[in-house]
Image 1: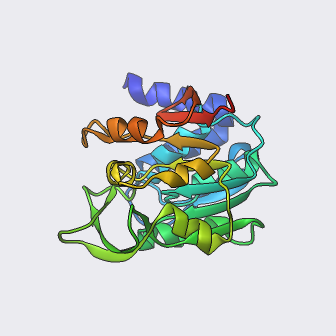
Image 2: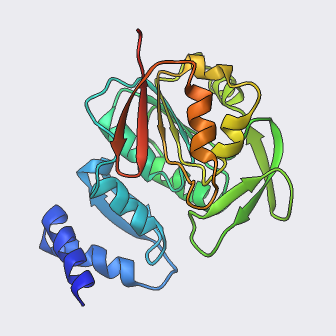
Length: 246
């Protein structure tokens, strides 16, 4: 009983009484259908699927520290955009930024397209981020819409695989101000690749590491970025690494 009350109190404090009650109700609903919710943090209303992990992602972005809004990121690549809530947060925080959103799952990608429709400076690609281009398999782990893992082999739905350089080429950019990575453990493969020289063209990386169920993710990431100098800060479950000039 105490947990629901604490949750209600948190949402009421953040959104007001009516919106707070509605958000808690949407989280408790069974899956099925869509709903619109609104926050200044997402630059207005967004579509979510009540009763799914969409609501937890919304909480992560709106209620908890996600990324500082006082940077000057101009070109952002969002790897693992899910339904576009991070894209909306980033666009609200950095309105002049160009954002390239990458999401492999068809259902999530449809929501991503809906949530970013008509927003200038946002380009969406349905693909998985991988160390090599071609095709990879997408497998759902559990029932959460956010719990999709990409893998080179095994059962799953085939999806296009894009490397970071391929994303940059397709989007016609030569430098990334912010590379946001939340790819459900595939950071292990991405940063274990023999060639990670593309990091030289990235100014900052925000990454969620999934060592709790894929040991070695953090080790691979920090080894890959070690040749460059960084300043580190922590925002919720993400590590923000900003490149230093000296």
